[in-house]
Amino acid sequence: MMSDGTHTLCPVHVTRQATFRCKQCGKPGCSMCQVSSPLGSFCSELCRERFEAFARKAQDVEMPEFKRPAFLRARAWVGRVFAIIAAVFGLLILGSTFYIPGLSQVAYLIRTFLGI
Ligand SMILES: [Zn+2]
Ligand SMILES: [Zn+2]
Image (cartoon, rainbow, N blue to C red; front, side):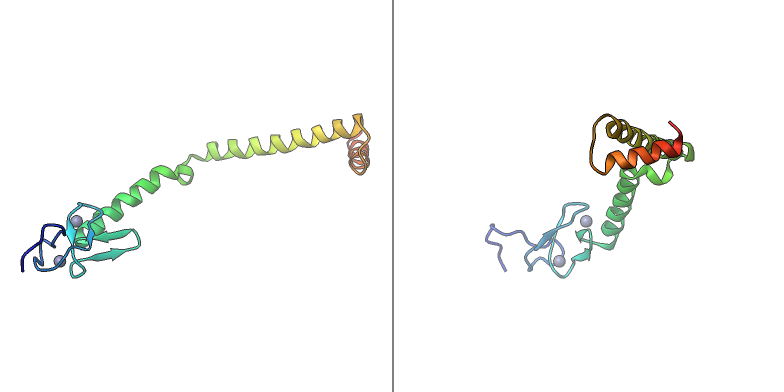
């Protein structure tokens, strides 16, 4: 069988047309040598394993949250609490300065409760 030069043939099964390119090494391959994975098509198990190892490593770099030291996570939590306190005080000031139905009553109740 002769190649007409417009299609790439599988380097292993030289009479078959290549239907994909390996995502790891870039080699063309046909449906007989294709190794499929959720991440793509590969020419061999070795390429699939290498690519999956690479993808796992890339994921670790993108999501460091997991490995962050505990004090950094605590700081993020403290920041969130301060944001909530600031929002509550903002509403209290707003509710005391202007008359806003509902909010002013709530602000009055909270101020009574806090004694301020
Ligand atoms: Zn490959
Ligand atoms: Zn093949």
